Image (cartoon, rainbow, N blue to C red; front, side, top):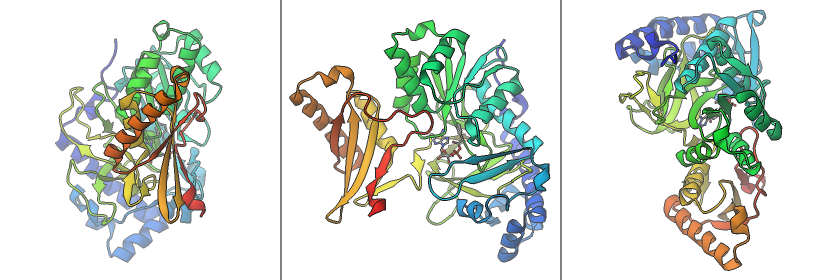
Length: 436
Ligand code: DLL
């Protein structure tokens, strides 16, 4: 029998009940940080506040922000709130720029994290009878261990495949009868493509759902993956600093992710001014961890752009929902003054459905002028089309991009399978301007 919720008392609590839990936990966290993290004590002192000033959720905006640079400045263990010996686990994000971001967990933190991903598995229709196929990387990256913890907490059977070796992934899906696949959406696409290329009918696979995250993706990409693998695809969000996957997760409604707000208190702020924005506004997502011991963070600026809503969800969960992340403030390209996110390019390409769902953005500067070239991969069928037909398709894409993005891009049609496939987070931008 499938349970609808992992922790119904929290997931369907009234807003008042949730706020009451949050208030108690916020006050406790602020005291914990002030007492045990010199970095926070100093910040509070500079602002002239003490933990006694925080009495309700309305006082949140009095608190200082924490930013990624603070983690770098205190690398690796400067923000811990417990002695190093009390840690149970260390995880870290690879970090494409600068030092990696390190997170320390106590045993309680790991258990809390497992509860968060267990909620995500149940929301994706998982039961304890299921085989959970984890193709996120295991290691310092939080993807593998995060989903693993949730599957174990639920009593599922975990298949800890980790990422890579796509041939083996498909064999395991087929031979072991995996029920739920967990990996990045770009890897799910690659696995789906492999299933198709091997001539396997997805209907013969037992897998029925996917839990995909760690990078931005679009609803069109969701449809593509669902078609290729014959599954229902669910989004999952998280970041190393806050705990890893499971900060929020998608239910059967597939219209955004419920935040585990009994553990992570969300806000949306204007990234320029730092001011809190009302519900429904688009802005930068900020989290305060309110039930973490090892490395609690106050008002951590994620740099992820989204909106929050308390609109009623048909799944019955009352946990606040965040929209898909459209991109990161530092992922946003500014091309000739226009803001462009790779997810917009993905939206247009998959909406048109004329090509393979693989693309790469190449940004450069010629004569002081930014240029954007979009490499788009042709399908095998297209590849045998006449040059004129291919040019026509490129033109259609160019016009669609111009009207959606508001800038003109050069479209370069490239051979099937020439854009590198991703087994983890896809790299979709080459910004040559950074090297000038
Ligand atoms: O990516 C944690 C994770 C693992 C999430 C597996 C989901 C599944 P980091 O490597 O620290 O942690 O990267 C965090 O990835 O700030 C977002 O910019 C992006 N991100 C994560 N999930 C999503 C998502 C993991 N569902 C950064 N949609 C975050 C869009 C996402 N972006």
